[in-house]
Length: 289
Length: 267
Image (cartoon, rainbow over all chains, first blue to last red; front, side):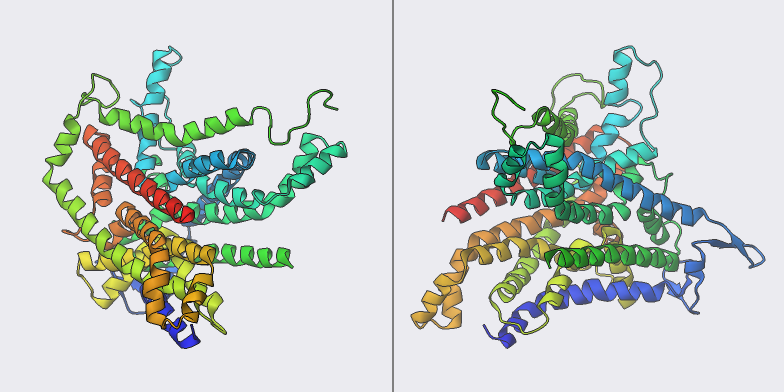
């Protein structure tokens, strides 16, 4: 197939994604420099107001007052996304290793079981935790039944429940890339290490972990990026009171009607996420060299 | 030293119990949802016998039926469009000769997987409203086609890579022109992967919530958006029942895609 025909075949995919996904990203950047229209949308003139809003608030007399509440939401989102990534790594690495150690037939079944949650609606997966954690839920019911508590514990609507929801949603994204790097491990390396009297801990630290690292790195980006912009876990399990960037962005286009601020926030998220992906692909290329 | 017991690196003490625990973590919440959906009591958490009545209530709910109808229509259109686009794209990436731009094309097609959903949702909203496009279902069909493309493309591309170019070369040696080659050799070999890709696209479209919520308008509500609205009002047996239905649909379709993909390997 020559270059002309190749371009012809790939053109539809590039055009559709280019027009309906990449162009809107740039349009959002433009919107972030406009003035909010209280009825939704934007109007002239162009301003930096949306970005100033990260740190300042406009007072009644139009003066800027330092107000870090939005900056704190951004920091909290980053903190929760990093915490999710770390927990997923700690929980997922042993699972990936276990799957690698199984027979091919069992590997296939286990991999399917890890992949399946990815294809199940996140809305429904998140909702399941409401059934378990709410005041009349399964967990509180069981604890009350066992006589451990009399009043329900506030398990829902806090950072812990948000974190739980995020880990539950994104854990498969960590297991799969680590598995695919560990799968290529040469068993003779481990046997050789053992012959040289390496302990299990040493085998892990000196052989398994260095080989798993590129997969862990890939998994970390795949977990961090969507966790940073997540909407459902903070909305359903955080009760919408504990805002994260995802729900803050969504609010600007619904109840708050401040499109420029929402566009500015989403631009910041996009820049952070794309930077993370670029850094990762650079490091992957460096390690290949 | 281990003495009598030979060293077996494939066995780490306690690891199988740990992994079992993680799988319980994955699946127990879903199982709990399904069990509650069959609970006849209106008080969701109090068990008072097995019943199908909430499924009947869901089936008789006109708003849910309308939303489900919208979801299926959108998913069918998005599946057909994205699978056709993805098949052409996969052929170009795997069989085409490009002197430049392959990396850029691959990166562009992967964009829907990289950009966070909330960003896609609001930028698509901005785009449609900026253009003055208020076409309800059509807007949703376009938005869904975009993010379904990479999901449809991945299995097709993988299959093209696996099967190599030898059969196509044989066809070329027998003087088949490009179109005949595609119709008689490549397409039949590729069909299982195309079906798998289409099923994945269908499931992804059917399940999409965030983008649909931001892009949809009155009258073009999809099923997940409607379910979300129900959830916001509180935990009810109807939510459990409709969620269980959606859960079952996803599992059946993904299992089908996997089986087709496996037959693919044996052939």
